[in-house]
Amino acid sequence: MKKELKNQIIETISAELNAYPDFYITDISGLNASQTSTLRRECFNQGVKLTVVKNTLFNHVISASENEEIKSLTSTLVGNTAIMYTNVPSAPGKLIKKLQKSGFAKPVVKGAYVQGCAYIGEDKLDQLAAIKTKDELIADIVSLLQSPMRNVLSGLQQAAEGKADDETIR
Image (cartoon, rainbow, N blue to C red; front, side):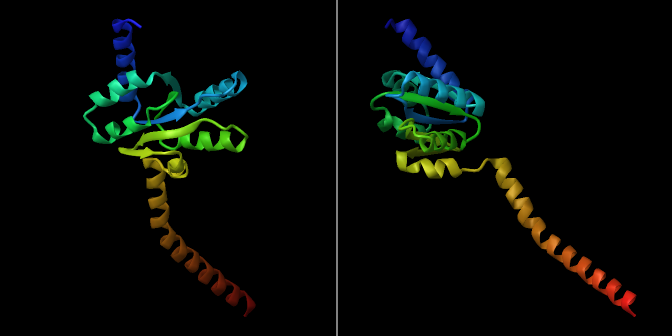
């Protein structure tokens, strides 16, 4: 491969890492054509961009990063590597779990960079799939804050209905 082409690929990977805040490093080797097509279709439907890369080129991108968390992912660059870029932190994790439940042996998570933290190993898949987005966390907090108010209003409504029932009986 010519040096100009390698530099172009490295620039493309760097641009993707800048465009997407989170990414998963996976192994999709061994999938047949049908499974690969299904994986790509599901990725498209979930808003996940799937790209197969050479480890050496991706290593150049990671090594050039100033982020130490991203640099810690260099140990995952062994064997075949595919990168799943995403704007929704848990989307690739949920997608991988769904595919594994349906009988796919792969993709396998080798590592991930999600919300500023590096995760290394397949054992982190459950944690990655459970990560909530900022909007989901805000909704949870608002719901928790509204819960006591709902209980008070419900109690007041029941008390008011109880008085109305007592007055009609008399």
